[in-house]
Image (cartoon, rainbow, N blue to C red; front, top):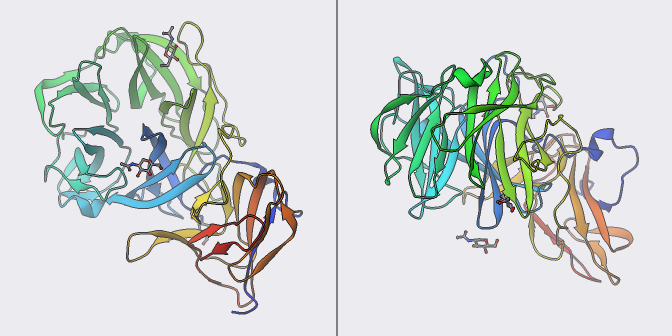
Length: 408
Ligand SMILES: *[C@@H]1O[C@H](CO)[C@@H](O)[C@H](O)[C@H]1NC(C)=O
Ligand SMILES: *[C@@H]1O[C@H](CO)[C@@H](O)[C@H](O)[C@H]1NC(C)=O
Ligand SMILES: *[C@@H]1O[C@H](CO)[C@@H](O)[C@H](O)[C@H]1NC(C)=O
């Protein structure tokens, strides 16, 4: 073990693959799909489905959570809900969305059921990070329902929408786990045949937006708008053309700290495909008429909103980009970085070491920095060791000004 080292370096490490310059896809430790971003407590919470590595068809068992306050460094919160949460579920932990109400968090997700087709279940938790429990013991809606999106209007009325290849909606009751009236079939003539699945509904100013995957398959992203939450919808255009190695796509849109962000998925991670997808994000600006611009998938991703402070304890699973490593949950529910092999690395972007005296060293297995780290830098943790596999686990790190720093 003595020869196994954690090396912290600031600036660019020479000889690294070009991918260290990329921030998209935003999660590299697992394959993620169907982004459902949610802004709560001044943080972006990104709920995601999870494609098992090596899948040749849909193989999805749990739902994952990540968070960020700067849009580039994402903290991994692990599994927040899984098929095991729902006694009636058989397989297919597919696209869902979370919303907060009455001091609780509600997570709407589709699954296939034992002996039946898809149904949408509801997970509920007192904290956004879960774990979520089955609120109903059965699906809220069944008969093949997939791709739920939830929206609470200004007057408090909540709506759940879903559907492939038709769009359906219901009025949720205040308890968020039952509904009033019947299941409605949205009038779709104005969609001009573009709607396929993956609806994402929200309101901006007085306009209701319905963003969706079009033209299965390969899919692109389109949108329609309306003056009310149930339409009639007017087709507005394409948001993102078909691009990359995934034959599906799925939208998620938020405003955060004054910017607007479009989340989607593709197959851009090594080993990526339509069954091993990855979530990516772009920043955009609405047109003066409320239009969403047409965007391309990039490897650059969204710009960093604010620098990261290295003088407070930072969880090691806070990552802008990584290679080789994975994360796991400890017995107390905390997450740590593991599967660390020789040559693997973690990049933490835009770390602000401040003016001199900056950070002079960092201790894990002791790690002197050559010189002093000052100013705003990308921070790389590069793992070096003999004996090949699983050098050590990595839980958190912290620098101190002009002195030793710590990591565990
Ligand atoms: C998938 O598995 C391969 C082979 O073990 C590994 O190299 C790769 O990092 C994994 N990728 C993800 C995203 O889990
Ligand atoms: C909200 O975020 C702050 C700052 O990160 C944190 O200290 C606080 O615990 C969070 N509140 C809740 C209810 O999680
Ligand atoms: C539209 O909404 C955005 C985001 O809430 C806000 O910043 C902007 O001022 C609004 N524009 C108008 C014309 O109301």
